[in-house]
Length: 234
Picture 1 (cartoon, helix red, strand yellow):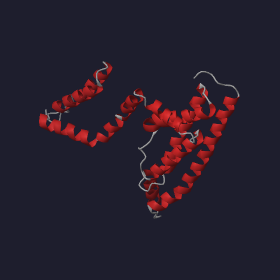
Picture 2: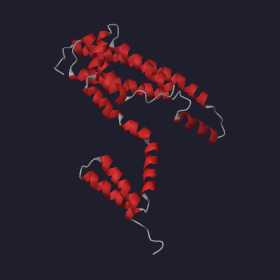
Picture 3: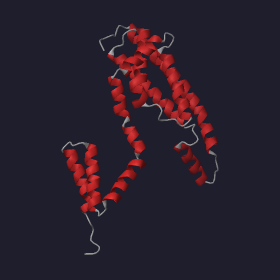
Picture 4: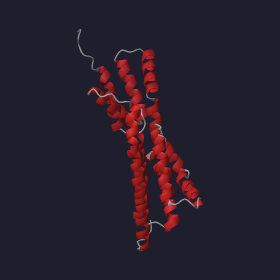
């Protein structure tokens, strides 16, 4: 009958559900589901392969992002964190506060240039910044206990967040800047993206100063805990 809805292309959904339930390889399950849905929809093999190839090319940056975690994990397994700690220990003049403050400034500057994905929790904080900050703190204070170690890691993560959040607002092509411009334009007020970005600069400077002070206060708190004899095995 004409006008009937063809439900066979939905077989791909069933294949995905069954494949994940049976704990099969996710990549293989998705590929098989795509092929089954395409064939059920009446697509010939060359056209189906063309659609799959186009989807892969258009979403290749997403695939590169997904590969970040296994690559970082492989580097950690081969001693990335240990090398980072050893490197920091070799820099005698680099303290805990100086290191995190320098990273904060670098993170903000890169974000102001639109390079928001150069650093991040997965790419830099866990494998590099956190162990480097721990090494710098241990060189100043001695061996850290579990609570001190967690506070150092939290401070490293917070430093990355603040540097990114207040730095990217200064980038004229950032989505929030364009959103503000569009909002004002809808109410008859014309603003240039550069003007909006420049107004975010004082906030970025204030955030840098405040976080730098917080880093120094965190260092003092670590020193007080260490002086109080709260060391336990990590």
